[in-house]
Length: 462
Image 1 (cartoon, helix red, strand yellow):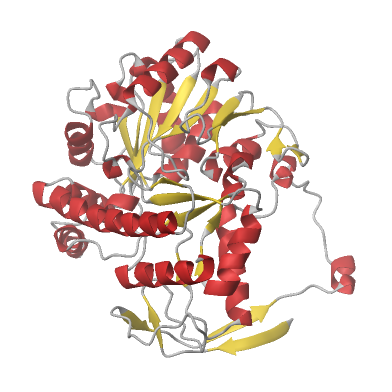
Image 2 (cartoon, helix red, strand yellow; image 1 turned 180 degrees about the vertical axis):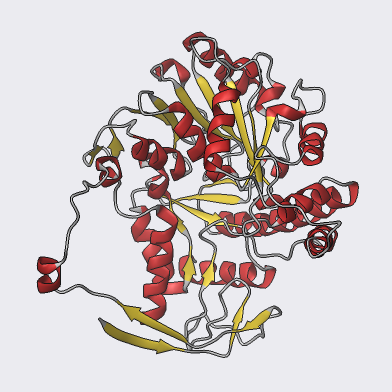
């Protein structure tokens, strides 16, 4: 075990981007949001060949499906490279526009409700222990009336959770290993990785950068980031995200109508990820259940993470209509309920108090203000890359900008930007082979950091 550089600094911005360095990309301005940072000891643990040879081993075999996974999950890998960059440039002012983590404070109307609920737990009258695994009734009712009014979705069709990403894995447990799946290419990597872990896929095929037994539905600028369904093979499960992460594209009503028909014709189930629905500017559906017939073939996952800044609070929901049935006629919702009751004790009651406050008239207005702030950031980023002559996609209906670097490796572009500007982006190939040649730039950041990042982009690519 060897002790590496002892890094210390006195202040760090709330987006972990105030590492000031003597470089042409440094800014002399002070950061408006800062908190004290303690000295950080970075320790590297290395097992020597002798230690590995003599290490005790159990007789338990490793899960062969997990062994199929390639490298690390995308965002921890980006974080690892960011950390390595800081070891190389310990005083660099790194700006993170990579992982889609919110940066602006949660509105007071929401945190006040959480604080009140938290304080009530210290009283006999206000204390509560385990709650319903499916979520508190008042919150489920508010979700139904706010997002699914007149769509035929009832309170008990909604399962409150600790986030959409967690529910994706719970759904995979419901589906099991003997199903086939399709995914947009590019797409959020949790869909593919959870499928691999469940044993739904074959081995990774390095020549095409794909897993066997997954139907990759290519989404490109040429097809408007909506797959040609006539070329898509039938699968049991179809993962679909709109507005899309990472491309920022939003499916139209006509496109989603085709998708629902495709699923119904093939007897498939759509898992519709609507985590960015409130960012929609165009007149496109916010929910898959706006499409006639969708309740018979679709599940919808959603989250407060990118609306209210709940990435750390953790609160989301999944909608499974009663009309959605397996091939033997058994309701999908009943099996999901069984998994939830087995694997989950319900979302935090404090977080649920915050969720209920989000859905009040004041809370909805406050969330719209936060979303509007990030959309302004998106506009600044889009205008910057447009001015530099790049082909830019997304941004209008999602907090992500999808920038094309034709003929170049995504990871090479990521490394170039990080090395020369100290800006973290996300390589497009991390979202699937269809993302090669692109980078994703997140609009989640303090305004001064976004403006500074755009100045650096212009200095690098002008």
